[in-house]
Length: 166
Image 1 (cartoon, one colour):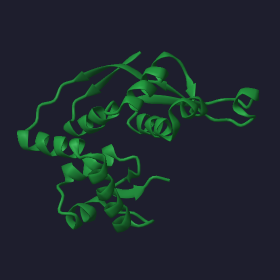
Image 2 (cartoon, one colour):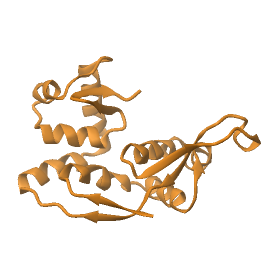
Image 3 (cartoon, rainbow, N blue to C red):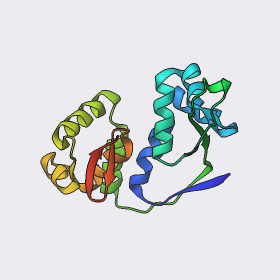
């Protein structure tokens, strides 16, 4: 397996959120040992398991491949997941103010974060908006906004724009 190097404070956000629930921990343990299909994870852990897989893929903790259609998957190809890393190497030096912003976003409870995501989604609409416009509108630093996007399963950066994940 490989070592995930974390040397940017913003990259701590997904690391801190990757194992924040029992389901995420269990799903990661499952994909650490072998390739697992989405249907296997959903059968065992429900939709929360599927969301965990999507989050692991987004933050690049899991690699994916497609199955070939056969009887075991109902004749349809589907994604399979396997853990990409087995070790973290975290080496960060940054101002305390920067670290406090990162930890603030990482530690927002799920309801507060969902409300913030909803507001951002409404603001950016279907076309997306430049990150500087979003940060200014919500009175956020660029660091806080980047931390929010790293944590969210609903948004992606496309160049300098923030868009809804399709």
